[in-house]
Image: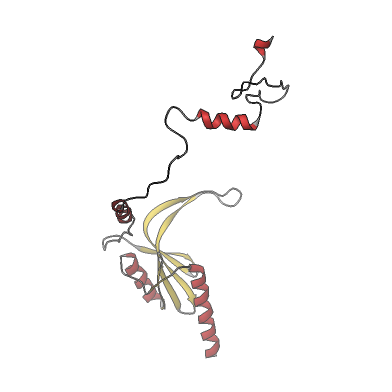
Length: 182
């Protein structure tokens, strides 16, 4: 009768019989987790690091930075503006990305990737953005030209660390300026 008693796979203690649910393999959570940690180790390949982390050497750091430099779009690239809504246009090169579905809100769809943006921030005041660079406020045609130039590698007027605060600050200053003019 003792030969038919189920035992814990970790500590080999007898298991209590259950009439419902999945048959037990371990007597406790402690045994289950200990078995999980030891079962994944085979021979010398440990699952977790045992020694101190070795710092990267200098050549690896420079190779890493060279891989992720922003690409300059050549003059031959076909760039065009698409109207997103009444206050923003995006400059795109036609590359398409999949936007995943959000359950109960929208189905998935395909959209073109933005290279740069032109955003209306006030009456006849437009801002050109490309990455973390910005240019403006200026007229619509100047902002479009600045966005194209920044997308092709030119530097913007200034860098933006927090885009939301930057837009809110610009709009507030333009509203204050328009209020003083009246």
